Image (cartoon, rainbow, N blue to C red; front, top):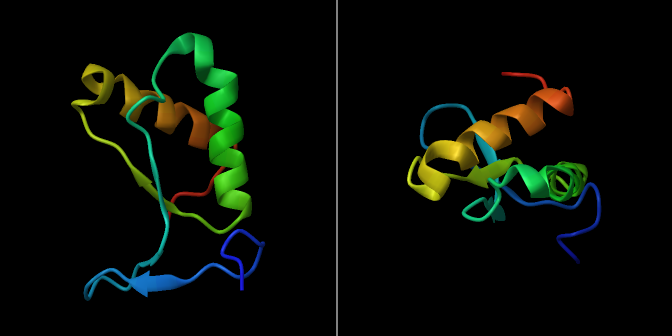
Length: 82
């Protein structure tokens, strides 16, 4: 079974929080430059389509720009906040 087929993602419980996160995470260390916004948006969109809901980011990545760019992308893609 391929994990990159829509509907076949494996999820794990995130402690006792009730949240379920994908077994695969997308790292956002390099996704922060304004000139790569559209490419980054496509990466996130494909990730979401394939069931990935765990995105690794940190304020260290691009001095916080990675977190800002990920937030803008999620908003543009109209990903609901839960």
